[in-house]
Length: 106
Image 1: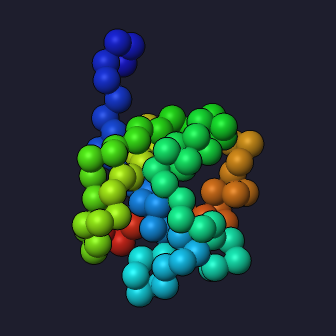
Image 2 (image 1 turned 180 degrees about the vertical axis):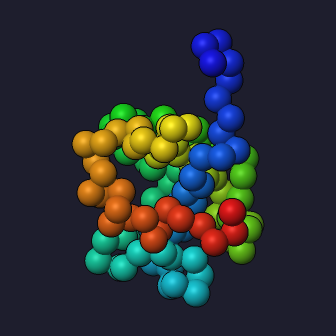
Image 3 (image 1 turned 180 degrees about the horizontal axis):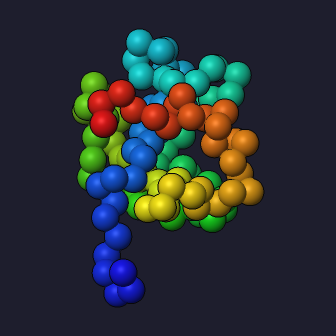
């Protein structure tokens, strides 16, 4: 796999609207208002992923399907091909967010 580009199509997709405290659940927010932040953008999410040492790919040219004005998304690699967590140090945090990160449309 050395020298090959990673297949990011299978990575978890995070739209900033998922954690936007100003949005309702009907508008796309997936976590409680208390845990959400105000008007996040994909660059901030990407910086957070890099801080947590998770591989990520920022896609500025993509839009949220329900609201095309919400531009940008981040693809994050949480698990390796063998099923092990990419960063086991944050495993408990990932389990807390598992409802946010799992998508019913896979």
